[in-house]
Length: 396
Image (tube, rainbow, N blue to C red; front, side, top):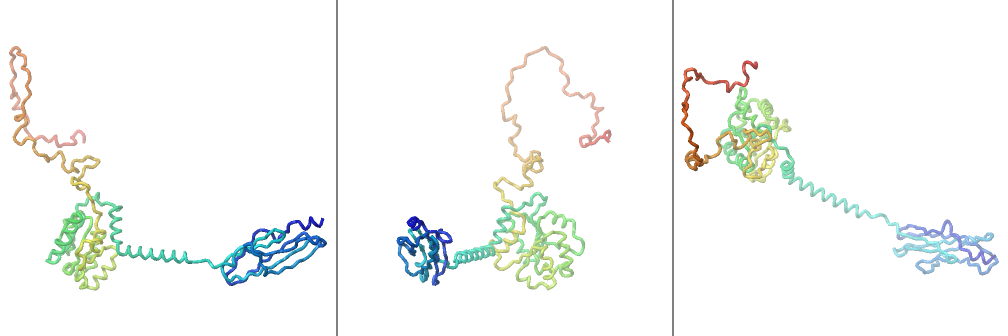
């Protein structure tokens, strides 16, 4: 009976499963191994030895306590480990009667925030680059988006893309005719209507002025120093500006850099107050180049440019539509738009007439007169008006 008890496997407390422990370098770890052994005190060969090992090497720095009881022996051992270097971490085993209980000692160094710091730095760099690119290329981005996804303004019945108002003096006339007009008409293919008259005279605007402005999609005002000397600008600029906003929803105001500094303070104040209703551009000394900020901002304020894919394409308002109206075609058939196929004369004179077989000879019959003149006196030679009458008197 004693040999049977001494040959039984020990029971580790609390259980024999591997235990994972964490600690830091420079600290001391305590491993506690407790085993309950079946034991017979009268049996001399009963093995009660407890041994600590690491990687198969025995360890001696441990304590051992035993607590005998009836048929059982409680064995308890504490192993003290000084973790002075990373190599001290690893697997430690407590063995009794060839049965082991494992303890895995691992480093509990604080988590590294290096990856998070690097990710934050990269994100900040990307945001900075994006902000820099947008600050320098935001106009190009807006132009690309407008030209790619913007709406066309072709079916509004307008004839001109812009109505330009300026003062007819040497400086303003040269700016409009030699700088503004060539760029908009030749480079962007816009249709312009120029007017050097007073757009807001002392009396009500003329019908011609209102008609021309209603035919234009945009209104451009060259607000130079000479322009401000007009009566409606010098006497009551605020009232004139309100009238201008009534004529056009969002007029484009072009100011010259050197002359804008000479504006009166009240004019600048009124422009700032209505800035949300205006598109204010400033012509500077570096605005001559086509890629300058001035031309890009002006292009954004103008309607979306129409690009024709072929040389034969024309204005979409004059191209044949679904209603097949001839007035919407470029070369309508009702007009004599084609050249004469036979300018020398009748086609019958230049081409051979068909040869027909001779008609059979029949008995002579009296031929009627080719022209009947018997009723010439009873005919009515008055101008006929029934061709133009759409509704007769009987229908009314």
